[in-house]
Length: 79
Image (cartoon, rainbow, N blue to C red):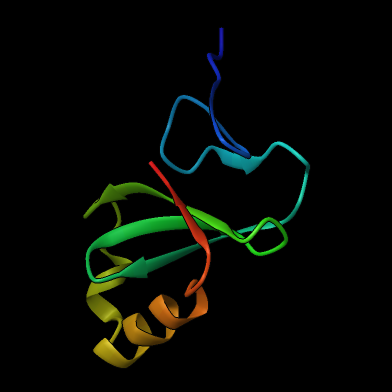
């Protein structure tokens, strides 16, 4: 049985990558440092889903993290 939790416009499943927009908008996963986030660009929201769960952040540069941070400026951070 899959349990779902709601946080604003996000619906959260049983594992960190199972996060989607309740309005069926496309979401994107990105990193800022070792932190993993999911954003909905249509709703202009983003949510933290974990830290150091995937090692892909180790191949990214500070420039990529800055670009990712800049991409959600003005968005609402969902706690």
